[in-house]
Image (tube, rainbow, N blue to C red):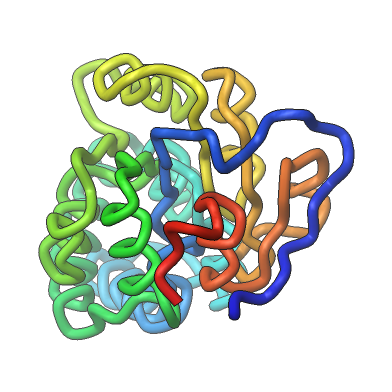
Length: 238
């Protein structure tokens, strides 16, 4: 049996009716705040030492709190006061370390593979909508085997650098129509869902603060709760 999710009473949309299921990545499917976060900090320490920069490396909790920010915010925040060319150079250096670390640490949250397979087998269209950049997201896609489940990926990428809401709207337009649902752990996921007219399921186990999930259609503590929310009982695979 699947555990019960906490349903918030302010919505009327039937989650079982959604056809398109959009997932955030970090803090939703992939626990990047742990090993990958440590690698990011190690890369920062190495880079500032190599370049002789007078910058203090932030702590692990800072990195976890920043997960969900796009590259235009994340990397400049790690290089405060530095010119754009230094920020870009650090981003490239850090991405080398991140992508290597992803292949060394490909594991998803418990139950993720099983849940993704169940949703796909039930006829849901799965898309990945994340603020991660193209190279990082591709490394997770390849390492975790996302291609088995997802129809497409919508990372934060040039030339347009669309917002998460704009990319969610694009995914819905390309793969069907509403109703759809966005699943994520941060306020940016909730905002994207509202922008695109989708439902929102918040993930309490991720990196967001509790208040970021206020107003969600449902809040879950584990991925194992999703089939009970999104699939009619007759098509669930126990």
